[in-house]
Length: 330
Image 1: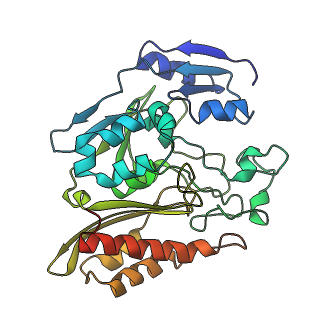
Image 2 (image 1 turned 180 degrees about the vertical axis):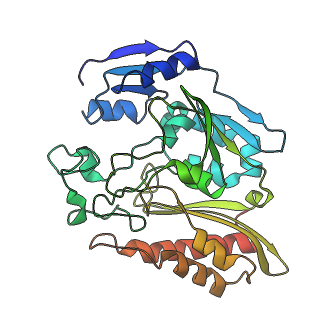
């Protein structure tokens, strides 16, 4: 790890100014991803701006019945929050499936949002990776790509977004609040992360110096009947091969509301809009769930090592919706 300057921000204005003025600066929250990447020599900030003393560590009620989650709330605290567990169970389940208890005690909501999208070659300095070195190529295209994406990919990058929390936030219509030198901006979670296109090294829509300060969840009664289902190679501490965050409301055998997002299959948390469209107003039965899953995965682009993910995603969507429709998930 090379040397770097350290700044402990006294307030949000100081933090934002410090990073906006220095292209080589990074914010430091829990550090579970940034410090790891610094050790590996992948992230090489000139300055680290510590924001852990800023007042963004609470979960607060909003006037409309939603929740405002500070960016420095620890993942373990958010997963255990009674309001989250009862109103948005998929979010609590996603957080608990995301890492070890030790990491959850350190990791923050803001840092989770900013995890680097990755594949095995991202960590291998001897390999070609457009995300690590723009223009160098992508060895994952014809290499070991079992964990890689099948939706939203490009010829420049097929890495997957690693966050479980963000998949649930995508399904819940979450909004990210960011603060920059020009003031406060609110970004829908589904617009916060970018698809790779020709610039996979640019992963979010954040401007220079912008700091994530909070995530807001709208009041969403359907989310009380929700589930996060994760399929992975190991029973714990592994990234998802496929995951599904789903909420479903059924009345008289018909789907009146559906929220669905996928993880492990795309370079960003993937809101399954096409599946939602197929489900809305239709019967809550196995055939309809299969049609919705087929519609969402119709555009999947698999490679030799990861083509199996399309079938796995379809099966996981159907199984999750079946549980929610019968009340098994409660």
